[in-house]
Image (tube, rainbow, N blue to C red; front, side, top):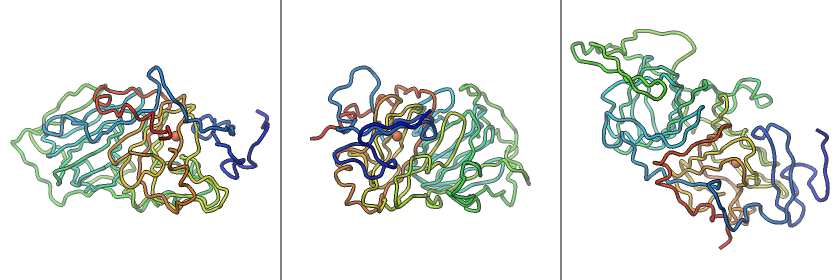
Amino acid sequence: MYLYHQGKHTRQAHVGLPEGTYEEEHGRQGFFGPVSHIYRTHPPTDWVRFEGSLRPHAYDFNNVTPPDHKDAGAGRQRLFYNDDVVLSVSRRGEAMPHYFRNGDGDEVWFVHEGEGMIETDYGTLEYERGDYIVIPRVTTYRIHPRTEKNFFLIIEAFPEVSIPTREQKGLIGVHALFDLSAITLPKLPETYDERAGEEHVILIQREGEISSMVYPFNPLDAVGWKGDLYPWKINVRDIRPVMSHRVHLPPPAHTTFVMNNAVICTFLPRPIEEDEDALKVPFYHRNTDYDEVLFYHAGDFFSRDNIKPGMVTLHPTGFHHGPHPKALANMHKLKRTDEIAVMLDTFNTLHVAPEAEAVEWKEYWKSWMKK
Ligand SMILES: [Fe+2]
């Protein structure tokens, strides 16, 4: 399409907004496709009413009680889902009495709270707060929390999960956003504890149904392995975000994991853009092709009021979101962001389970309204 313009506009996106205007980005393919910027005279979030189910949503996942919270033999709680991904929370207080294997997809565990160890076919992996743990499809594993208070955000992905390729990283080089040397792999135990005579149950999930398989010995009996498929982890402290001191970068600059029809990004503390005329808060946009989930892990969520760690926002395709009025008013005072958040963007509509609806903050859509 021909690059066209009318009326007041900037020379470059997100820089030197015409006096008294609010910039909205209207773009396709999650910031990679055709895009226009609209310079408005009101913030597009200055609505006064919503009717129907489509609106901004926020949920307090701290108030979700997954089955595994009190019953070690039970599972996680599914909260959002579609044909590509399922987002769940586990608050397991005790070790799994069984082994587990997901025949439906890869799993990405984000450790919001707690520490412990995971036994896998490839050895044991210690985990701590802020870890992303990637467990490939049909890996057998068992979680052993060491802490009483545990909170895992689990993204189950039916398409294969990978990290951005060399080509996707492009100009920023192969060591962005973390050097592969910073990942941690499981370690094989020095001795094999056969525990013969006991029954060892592996629960296997396929099409959401659970079946089980029983061995008369510890099935994690590997004494060696080789190859390029294995569970691994990276801690958010080892992810080194890129930014520009001169222009606000779009969310894909913070991509951690990619898969067909979904992407996981991590927002981390960083300096604010320095240039006087650079936009310093996320620009307004209506999600055009993606539903957007943000899980707030730690820090001060500068662009959102009344959002605390463990809370989640869901901004479905179709209407706007952008900074809250207070963040916009204070953007020139800020020097750094101090937030850690996990974003899941999905190409297909996410459905909300009743257990998530039960912890919804129903008035969230009003939070953009000026008091
Ligand atoms: Fe967004």
